[in-house]
Each structure stands twice: as structure tokens, then as C-alpha cells.
Figure 1 (cartoon, rainbow, N blue to C red):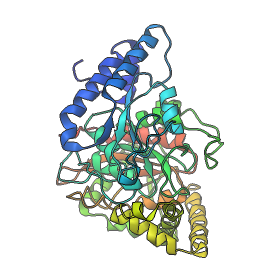
Figure 2 (figure 1 turned 60 degrees about the horizontal axis):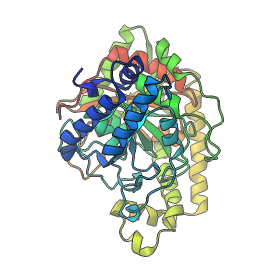
Figure 3 (figure 1 turned 90 degrees about the horizontal axis):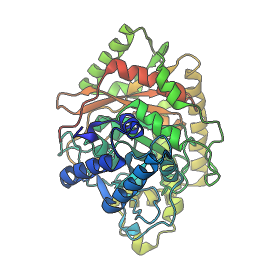
Figure 4 (figure 1 turned 90 degrees about the vertical axis):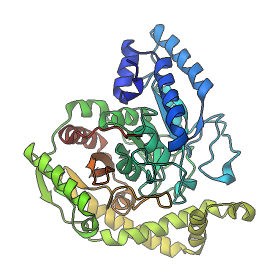
Length: 450
């Protein structure tokens, strides 16, 4: 097969395992794709051309000896440039970190390597994973944003430059670019994946995210990287379920709670139309879809989350020398300055609201298997000045519950739209199983036309 890059991650892993393709051939296909398209897309900030080819050859030798490293053996992936990578620059999109080369891997990166994945390089991010845009363009239409802050990871996947990628989400930074670029995004429960070795924005809200081309692919990566890490005291010690078994079973949700009132009523007509089509598709397949009442404190979460992000960003921001702070982008600099003005009591008030909101969200799952909502109010904005609107995604980040974003169609401009499935804390196995079933019914899997 000439176009090996067209495989999804699960297919690529199976092809390596079965001997249908070598790790070298998979890696070469991705590198050639990057060389051809990235001068326009700008999804990558660092590529390990020669090094990753040598690593691929070593993994081929291991496979020939019958020594497969793990479920991702020989599959090339990307890593957002906020994850520490040993011997490879980690700049977090900022000139203040341009010379930083870590001596060790972030835990999530280490676990990817342990599962056999090949790290192609670092994908572009907005500065410190906040709002100052990266140079990355949307592969569907190059004059539109791919979203942020996991801009490069989503764009690289949509352009078929890699088979999976790590991102992060503090507000909407995994699910939004997934929606804008027509790929799958998974934001697990807070603490499900270690944040050790990830450059922080707001530690109480930072989540490691996963971007792939299918729900099964997301399950594969989550299986490889999930679990407690003593280097991250906030990581969960809850057992890691068998996510791959969950997607194989692909269960149909019985009761789906539809969120389209309140803030979700602000979606544009294209989003509303595709949401209605999605609901009709699922109902025809036997799902009971019921209008869900949004949590009472939902409208207050945006301000509370903004307080927490600014307050926590100021914790590390105050350590940046004045001369370096002046080199920061305008939006991250303003965030730090706002955070320095927030009092401990204001932060405590935001935390109390978060606890109430989490309780309200948890009660919804006494009635519903999943919640369904649009991922964004509209498709990707034109231009690169904005990374897009996160307000439909932010509440679930604030609550720390798992979210799966799946593409559902194209708007009138031929840009992707996404829907998000929201589940109870630490129920990623059910979320992925239900999500895989929904994905097969919706059946959207188009490649970006770049």
C-alpha cells in the first residue's frame, strides 16, 4: 500500500504487528507527508527526521525477534510542545523557553514510548497553551484557525501527518481543535493521565488530552498512558479499565441527555442543523434522547473558571523575570497580570462554585448514560487572530469530567463541526464504548482536503 499514512492508528498498529508494513515504511510515509504539507500548515515546530528513522529501524529489528514493545509498537505520533521530551527542545510556544531542552520525558511521553510509539516530533501550541495564536493553519481551509491550544496536534492529524497526538486542555484546548479539524478529541477525567513533565498553565485545571482519527484510536492511546503516577500527586489511583475491550463491545447508550438550552442555544444554524441530524440518526438506531436541564450554576462557571486560570497562572508567572515577562505574548502576559490581582478569597469562592457545579453535573448521570451537546457555537473562524470560542467546552473542564469530541459533518463553508459526549467521572470505558457505537452510526471520517 503506497499511502500508508491513510491508515488510522489501530490499523497501523495491526499492520505492524501482522508484518504487513514495517515501522520504517510507516515513519517514512509520515515524514514525506510532513515535508509536503507542513510548509503550508505549520503543524510542527520540531521534527526528528534522522533520529526517528533510526528508532523505527530498531523497532523493526525488535519485531523480527518477536519482541513487540506494546500496543503502539512502531506507530508514529506527535506530542504537543508543552510535554517534556528528553534531549528535544520543549518551548511551550514561548520565546522565554526557546533554549530549554529537558533531560527527561513527561510521564505521558514515557508511557507512549514504553508502548512502542515513535515520537515524530513536537506539534505547535499557542504560547503556554493559552490564547496567543500559534502559526498553525486549518488543513480544511488554510485561511481559518485550527483552534487552540493543541493547534498543531489537531492539524497534523487532519492532514494525515501522524496517527495520533497528545494535547492538553485547561479550558477547551483539545475538544475545540478536534471539532474545527474534523478529528476525535478525548479529554479524560482530571487526574486520569499524569501531568508530570507538562509545562503548566493552571495546574488545578490542566488535563492531558488525546487527538486521533477514531474513537478506537483514542482508546488505544488512553490505554497506554492512563494511570497513577507518583510524580503527579494529583493523578488518580483509581484502577485503569480495559478501554480496548470497551470499544470492541461498542455498546448502545440507553438514555442520552440532550443539552441545547441556556448557553447551548447560542449555536449558529449550521451547528443546530447537524445536532438535530445527529439526534435523529441516534434515535432511529434505538437511543432514547431526552432533553436535559442544564445545571443551575452553569452560567456562572465561565467567570469562576477565568478566576482560577488567572490565579494559578500567576503562581508560575510571578517567577518569570521582568525582562522575560515583557517578551510574552499580550494575552498570556495580561492573564498573569490579572492573576496577580486575584485574592485568595476570590479563588476560594470560585472553588466553592466548582464544587457545587461538579455535584450538579454528577447528579445528571443518575438519569443519563451520556450527555450530548455541540462542541462549539460555530465552525472554525476565519483568520488566525483567534483560536475560537470555548464556552460550550469549558464547563466540563471546570467539572473535571471526561468528554469525547467526535466530528458530525461539515457546515456550509465545508468546515468540520463536532459534537461532544460527556460522561461521569472515571467512566472513560463506558464513554469510549458508547462513543464508538455513536461514531459508527454518524459515520463521518473525511480527510482534510489540504
